[in-house]
Length: 137
Image (cartoon, rainbow, N blue to C red):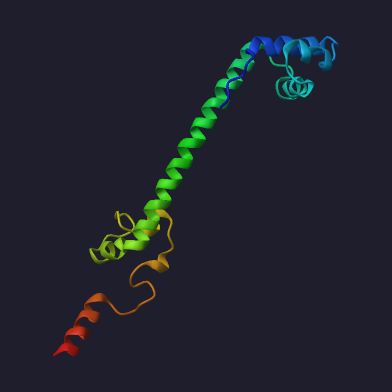
């Protein structure tokens, strides 16, 4: 987040002058900013005291940090889902008998159950193995 050239106290002082009736076009050149900047401050911070403005900026910074953390975790989760789906680890977990509480169940991380081995296939793995050995003999 870009650091402001003005302290919270300076912004609040400029807004108090606007509340007293001084136009933004007079205050802006004195501060070295465009009048629209002062109007933006007025729209965003109207009625706040210096302490309120300080707290607001702290909360905005904290919120931005939390959003970055959540985005990073969502990317990690998507990568894990893709890896599980790609490598078929869910198939091995189901063969070991891990259920919904197991670590390999795709439903626990939000993937649909129809991707599980055997969900749409009525033939069990042991029956499939027997049929292969019967054909080989």
